[in-house]
Image (cartoon, rainbow over all chains, first blue to last red; front, side, top):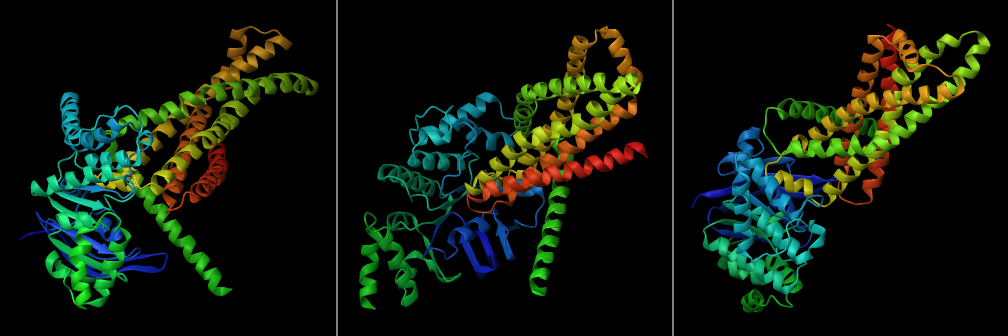
Length: 265
Length: 258
């Protein structure tokens, strides 16, 4: 299987603190990879570097075989048209209407699009989750859950092949989380590549083909989901149980799956 | 002690290199701005509306009152020294060449400079800048260049407006104290106004506009994570903008007399 993203020798420091140290990973195309790890292990940073949002202090990031931090602006734009990123805190543009939040990326990537085409594209997306809010309002007028859903839709506006998800179901109510999970499942069914950082056992058990476990600035385990969760490595088992305990109130699927393995230890 | 000084010097050098790189990237993006059909035009329009149109009220008040004060002082003091004719030279020197550009700059710093650095700083904290990057939208070409152009154009236009209102204000008050025909007043002004005065005035306002927009956006982007950094950087943006505008004013005034 071809790799959608490949990172090698990745190093990232912030305020003299080493966050990522010599990370090398591959994310297969048309598959879902879930990244888990304790808080502060560098998961979100890794995701942003892989998406070309943050520049690393060392190492290389290849997106569909192209060095994302070495290509020209035009090529970079083409590459980023193929990706979408859902931020942990939605990151909607607060000083724009909801409509403009969708319109700006569309117009930037497709300057020849007519107003009717833009309208139709946006309405088509909104129908995916039956989003009925007035699009002339600012994002602050939406609930946190709605903001997250809308941010998800905005990430899909350029029809990306690869979607990066940073804690897509965190800090949202159960109903919004369900809508988001359904959206992610549909994307998976459509054959999109998904790279998700999450603490949700439910989401992980539903979508993960591959699992990466991070800790102490490095990768502790990686591979097919079914193999990684059966690891004999106590550090990985500890991190997974810690991470999953945080979401155990309603995300029980993976805990159930993991528990017998940990009991065997 | 030596280590601390070294650390401070290193920090300053790093900041200067970063600022130079920022300036270079802005100029590069500026050259490409008009060649691209892009959504940045909307940001440019909004910036001109906010910086230019919405500042007209305060500029009118300031310029009218300043013009009035100069004419009162001039008409009272200058005849005592037998230099009543110098009033036109003083009006052009003070309003057109000196105070017009710098006072307009101070108002723009207070209104738009703080607004720009605060807005961008908040966008950094809420990851909105990262959201632009995730779509391949270059924040320099989408956020900085329209603000650079908007503030610079607005500065030049507001300075023109300041001049017109300042000179009209001085005429209106001057006629109350010493009735004078408008054409006589206008001829008096035109007789001392030179092309160099106009170039100096507009040149200064353009340079101040560039300084304010670059410094404000630069400090907006210097915010890293916390919302508490936003007002701190806005204060720095204001302080540095004022200092740089004053220094640029001195240099440009020297150039005028060279």
